[in-house]
Structures are given as C-alpha cells and as structure tokens.
Amino acid sequence: METSHGEATVKTAFLRDALNRLLTVKPEAKPAILSGLSTRLGAMRAEAELYEQPSRADDATRKRLEQILSAPEFSRVHGPTALELFKQRIGAWILKQLRKISPKVPDLQNAGQIFVWVMIALASAVAGLWLYRLSRQNMADGKREILPFMFSSRTWVQWLSQARDQAARGQWRDAIHFGFWAAVSLLESQGVWSPDKARTPREYLSAIPGSSLSKEPFSAIARRFEASWYGNRPTTEADFREFTVNLEKLGCR
Image (cartoon, rainbow, N blue to C red; front, side, top):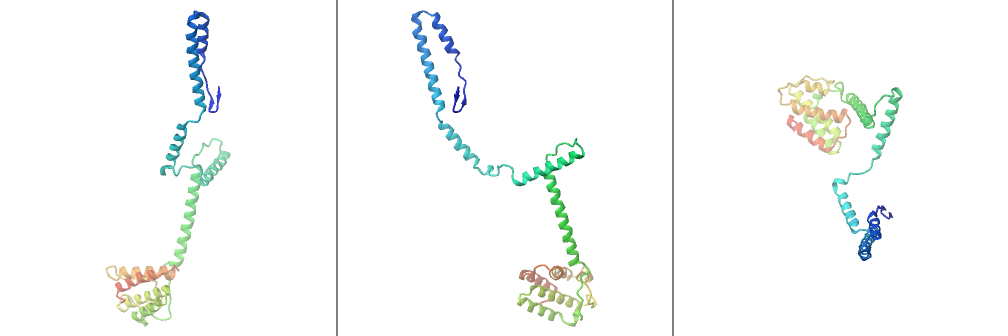
C-alpha cells in the first residue's frame, strides 16, 4: 500500500481465515465472526487514516533536533571548505603523477595536506633565509661608521645634549644615534678602550671586560643602536625611553 510516508505492508491472513470459517461454521456462529471482522477492519482503517496525518511528535522532534544542532559544540560542523577541496585536488593530482611512474603506488589519503605543509615549510625557509641575509647585510659586525673626528673630541655630555635635542624634535632614530656616541665617549674617557674612529659597536662591546658593570647596559645600548641605525627599524619614543634607562645605568645622566 502506497502512502505519503512511503510504502506500507498490511497483513491480510486474518481476513482469509475468517472467510474460510464463515464457509464451515453453523449459521448462528456467523454473526459473531462478521462482527469481529468488521471491528478489526474498522480499527485498521482508523490507524491508516491516522498514519497519513502529520504527527505533532515529528514537529517536536524537529525542534529538539534544531536546538541540539544550534549548540556551540556543533558550530564548527560544516561541509568541506575551499582549502579542504583544494587539498583533495592536490592529493589527487599527486597520486595521478605518482601512478604514472608506478601503477602500484598505494592511495595517499593525506597527500594534499602533506603537499600544503611542504609548501608552507619551503616558503618559511626561503623567507627565513632572506631575512637572515638582510640582517647580516644591515647588522653585520663589519658595519662601521667612520667619522672625520674622534668621539672623545666631544665630551659625553655634549653627545647626550645632542641626543636630547633630537628627542625634543621627535627624531628618535637620531637621538639614539647621538646617545650611543655619548656612551662610547663616556667609557673612552674612563680608559676602557683607546680612541678608534672605525671600531664597530660589537668591537666596543668586546673591549669591555666581562666583570665590568658597564657590560650589560652597554650591550643593550649597542643592540638598540644597531637595530635603529643599521637595521633601519622604526624607532619610537618608547624605544628612546628604554634606551635612556640604559644610558643612565651606564652613567650618562
């Protein structure tokens, strides 16, 4: 029997048995058989009509299911994304190329994902190598600033004054530049090293004894100076404030 919900099977063996009994029983017994048969057929008809009607339970079940699926733990359930489809296509292409070489290559379920990660790793390696070379070019030990005069020809107070003048104008990079030479001039006046117009920041740092209290603040000063002056990194007021703290630790106040 076809219904709006699909095909349904109804057993009719009871009807055949009742008709067979009607042919064999005494006349006085036939009304009871017919009455029972009529009652059962009526009940089956009522059930069939009820089956065709929409069920309130279906609506309640649907609402409950929608509530469950709207919960946070199901928020990420979705079909394949564009990236996942791309990985699948890449995996299929890789498998196709490998099977041209050897038909016995097994299925690689994660070939697309492996390819994507390999490409990311390769791009990261290239970017890292480029940054390393750029850093070496900009901040190598060979970076030197050769001035036409000795740093000690100006006192560290003069260098520091120039640094503060540049800071007042918002020229933070130049302020750190002059502040670095204030630090160099101060340590030179203390006899930490002999005058040298072509010494690099790293060479100045290496010339300070490891036990000296000046080693740590000058190291921070030199790093900030290299990053700002040679590395051309953006220099801010906060950078200069931090730089000034290390100058004061060194004795440039």
